[in-house]
Length: 471
Image (cartoon, rainbow, N blue to C red; front, top):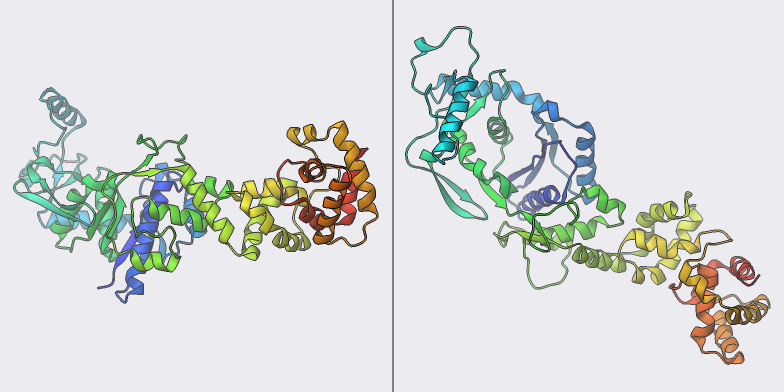
């Protein structure tokens, strides 16, 4: 059997953390079985049957987000609204087979059922008044819906990949609508038909869909179709255990992209949210695929922590190849300095990255901390850097400037030697000279070693900045 999974978001919003994790788990499960010789296929389906809530920008954001995360699909994107005729066809097949029936209950009757249930403190449910009516009772030229004739005794069993076997008492499940009066199918029906037609074997999705599994299983059974294996992933909570909201990080994936998180780090972190793979701090992408067999997914809610995500991003920034990092960071540096980066500047960025990436947890922080390498004089000094340029510091820097102007060997080693000599000549600790120098040439209080900074800035730019600082 070829394992087939799918990610089927509704295009009413952007790709958020929970959706991205669901897509990742489906992708990993398919790729795991593909790797181990059991087939393995990942389908992208856009569940857009509700065209009134359709959002083309959201569709684009969903697709772009998946591509950015590296979650490629084998089939799709398939747009569910293009298959509405097929969904309606199945509803009429069920009707013809006696597995469904017409319901002419009015809005007023349905409202009365809800009021009665409320008085009895029971969940609202349809009372089945049209379930066994003879077709001769059907009113002429009146709108009707089609309801599934659900079993009324026994239980519907759901064998969940994560939660185990769960039995739903059929007496608690009413005859739900599968085709509306306007001829449009409901989510329950459309999802089942598409999962069957696409050959989906495993439906891995968020825990909020768990109660749908029983009703969807009943449609599969009524059609005589095999029921896919369900797997319901627990929700993601905030670090404090409360429901995840925007203030905790419940924003679209594009937010993390804009904030300078790299895909490798976000995928790693999402995989950890609810799945354990061993004792190692980090595993490779290939190892992640090898180990993701559907086991070791936690039943309890996962907790999102922005601090943990930042630390994981820091790890990948530190260990990433400098040329690859320069390519993804160049756009952030360009945004920071307000102009496009040249090829020569990208090459220079590769050289300065080793001194910068130990000090930043995101690409945004990286660009902010290293943008001074690519700005033109005069540079703006941060308030804390200005405070370092005292009258005494200015005098020390003027003396240093004279020494630097006479230096022809502008290598980092030579610069470092000169700085130590000058600090000693001025009876200063090295930091007493290096700190105001750093402030003058970078505009910051923190940077890589000042000798390295002088070297990579180059002789002309370094002297120009220092002359401006000392007046």
